[in-house]
Length: 295
Ligand SMILES: NC(=O)c1ccc[n+]([C@@H]2O[C@H](COP(=O)([O-])OP(=O)(O)OC[C@H]3O[C@@H](n4cnc5c(N)ncnc54)[C@H](O)[C@@H]3O)[C@@H](O)[C@H]2O)c1
Image (cartoon, rainbow, N blue to C red; front, side, top):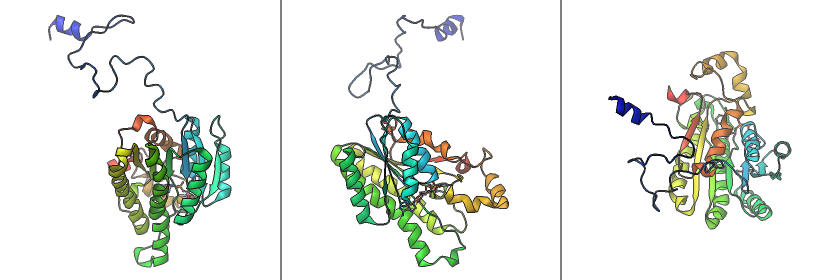
């Protein structure tokens, strides 16, 4: 490289000085978004959720509780719905931030009539749900040959049918208003096989592909839908399995970052996917797993 070339590459633009016109910066047009150069601060509020109402289903649980508090931190109004009303109320109280105005409701996601009722009540009270987090879930683990039809139905009804019922009920209003961000909690089990886990794996695999199917249908109405896939994270759901030191060290050894997840590890991705910054992200499952599924 000649000295002149090197100087050209290193040319510094001082504040106030006109930047050089680059051959790679196209002139602004209606198809190319914002005019360049971008004014300072133009991207500063991309993650702001002020003025949005977020319904956090399963918000009495460990992962959804952290996500609810994070969304409140970014300005969202919060409604928590959970089968366990006391835990939903605890989360609502923990979301106490200016504008969060948090409320709690009892909801069984396996009951489609109750889902319609509770969603209608929250919509009436808030003026409309803009963000939905599907975070309710249960697990039953046993050798494959021991699962009963009741076990199968319980896990599928809660973890897969429940996500469909709530998404459908909340989506109805979003489609009418022309805006919505929906996020479901899948799992690394959406992608990886684990023993003694067939109903849960079927439900979580179902979430990943159902997310894509909703995404392709609802995008023209301003509604995006994505999923996150956490790895093993210490909550009530995993308390028993992670209590066994042998299982613990075996599972942790498969995670490149060398530790289990924490509920707080999910909140940045959840806020991102439910904010304006993710407006062109649709139908994806983002694995938040310390690299487990990269291995
Ligand atoms: N903890 C993990 O390691 C992990 C990993 C991957 C995915 N997930 C998923 O994350 C989600 C949240 O799990 P968590 O770890 O916070 O567990 P958690 O047990 O702490 O929370 C689950 C919540 O779902 C609620 N719930 C259960 N059945 C319900 C129903 N029928 N209707 C309404 N609410 C119901 C429970 O009351 C509870 O508050 C689940 O979908 C789970 O499958 C968890």
